[in-house]
Length: 451
Image (cartoon, rainbow, N blue to C red):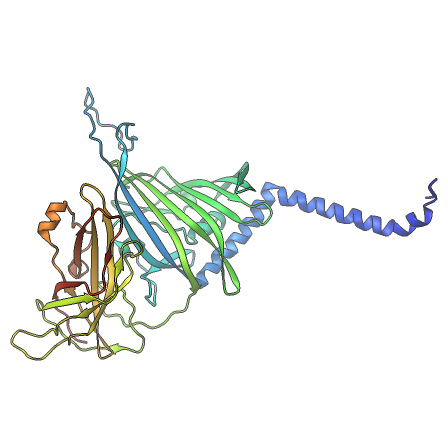
């Protein structure tokens, strides 16, 4: 079509270009609409998150859990008409919580068939027991490493609802609510009769441009009868971690808050580090039920040392224990100060200088009513000329000091797991202490048989 401006040739020559531009503009508009459509963003993000959750099975990370325990410090006043408040009633404003105790736990974690598996750091195989059987004391949870991704974004029966746009760190995010009903839930809580499934709900935020998960919250809904808590909730902030040729989506930090029925609260803050591809290796294991899981040198062999019960042992730490970083689960080594021998014998069953290995069992900082640190150690093997033998010893706690500090030694442990430990108390007003290398402690052997 000829125009009055005489641009016929130019117009005729540029018709294909104009069409191309229009096609590109239409495609861009369609992409923009899809990219900003909440349902399309959710569908694309779910697909990516499911793939990432499956990819986690190839990796293992070190999981550090810092736990804080709060308690009421103001005495309650009896009501005029005695009537017990509901078990989960909030405390009155004049009955605040104060931080009473902290501790730290360290594990290695991976995912297998949608479930998280844990082990002690440095161990060469994962434990199939529940994580609370591994840690045994204090509140623990699973899901942060990858199980939440699979359960919330990869399972049928989950309901989603778009809540609108939110801004975080200068970035526009889409916020969604979700509900996982009891019938679709793989979320289990501990009750007085065992583990029971619980419905849960929460919110998550997605980047509508990259489909990245930015944050996630999880809250229990109507916990089953017999639980020790009123409410449990977790908040997770995510980041990408590059390992080898792959990217993992892991929480930058995961915080779990539990409101107990008897009033106190606990908070767990979990971080992940030292992620790597998982490779199984062999390990010498003497007793699966009682072992602290300390990793042994692969070149070492099994020993044949048999120790009777009650022989005195003096051990000296080979490395310091810094409470600013140490955690339950960390490996610990000590040196035998004086040869271990039977009464009346001149022959050493274990020579001086032999190295014993085990793990830190507890790293606790108590603030109320008296400030002190409690460090619990356990050893389970001794290296004599590169031969590894079972080695179980016990160190009696200072009962007089424990009474003075009002220290509680109750642990949810039984048998040799409980007896084969040493508990050490360090009164101090300092926020951190270092137990130096060379620190000596007195122990006595528990019976072990040669193999």
